[in-house]
Image 1 (spheres, rainbow, N blue to C red):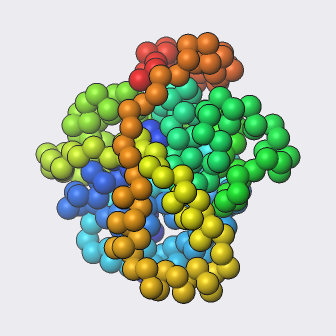
Image 2: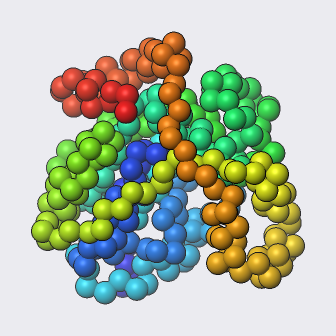
Image 3: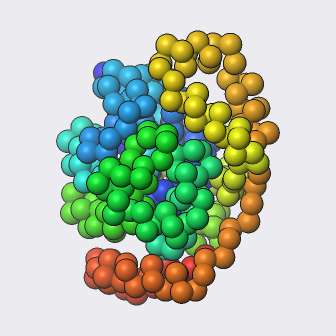
Length: 303
């Protein structure tokens, strides 16, 4: 019998998905794969050169260790902006599949996505505003970073527009009884309350308390030279890259990455830029308010 997920954390990116994934994974009635947090199996319209779990056999292997857990889940943030993902999930897992959709205001969401990509080398423009200005060029395949793993994923504004559009798409496909929305500010300010509500939504024991450790703080590379070496290795042909990986064991690779990582505080976005971004997404927010039938301005205020 195929073991397939019956719930998904679909994103948004940088809206608390990693933290929720780790908290839910600790629950004895929930199974989530440790090998890969973001298999992206259902994002068939999102190019992803490095994903091995686009193959059905590999994807299903993530759930081979399921025992008698009530809920089986995974968390791929690309499902929040993939047009194909909602229907693909319904066709493969059923219309009663539970969807957890996490939302964050556009300014912080864009800034956090840019920061993450710059840290991991898939963005080479350190200035946030400049990276946003390049989006029209990058849509045409111009001025892309040296490490071109998935160019679609650095079209930051386009991603956020798609996220807001997908809110209605998920509701239309799965129904409001099967979709839970979590706003980042609520989760950040009271993770225990949001976690308990999520367990209730999933129909598992809501009295379980996980280790609420802080996940995914903002990071930047200490040395841009080391980051450049990392990018060069990632660009090597697979046989050579695998040869290097064989000699540099995972623990050592993680240690090197950790040594080159510096946690930083969130930089203040200039008010003029923040206002410009919020204005660009004002229609999306109004559309969202129609879907929720309430003012979501406070929920999406700047964190």
